[in-house]
Length: 114
Length: 113
Image 1: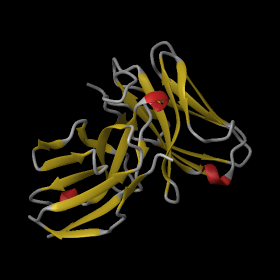
Image 2: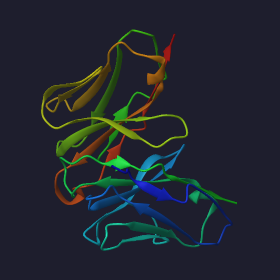
Image 3: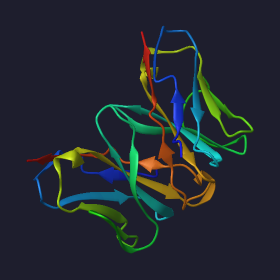
Image 4: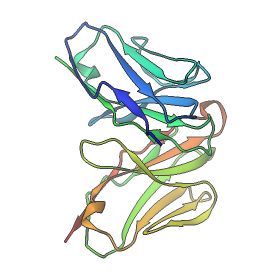
């Protein structure tokens, strides 16, 4: 059974540009969450999607957005990139939305903003 | 503020010893608890989940939950050098933040041969 797939694995962008990251959850999983990981802040929640609807949103500026498609695949977009957006972006897949459900992470996308 | 606290370590144990990792959380509405292992440069890997008070064992790993004291721990028996990683404690709450994981900053574990 395939795991969570994130593309691309690595990305280098210039300040001011925008970027789109993609996540394909485990087959049959309908909930996708996104996290940002930096050495200074640890793992920070960005947002969660379930059934194509954003269900939760973390404390990030509006430059960070996302969406989920009918096949549960998800994308996140960051516009007007800043140096501080350099981080590992992680996607987590869960069977359903809920507390007693396990979340499995993809390999992540390493974004470097120069 | 839904805080999850972990000792940052580093925690260093010899091969074959028991490694004990601790986590406390501030919100009594916390419902489910998870331990992830993260190797350097890799993504977090789920190793244990626990939802009710008591112990849960899986191979060399035992998770312990005490909701009254608001702590959850992970014991690694017969520690191996391959267990050297950062261990992240994560918590989910009831209510509007249903699917969201709140993470601690992680404890770095080193197992030396």
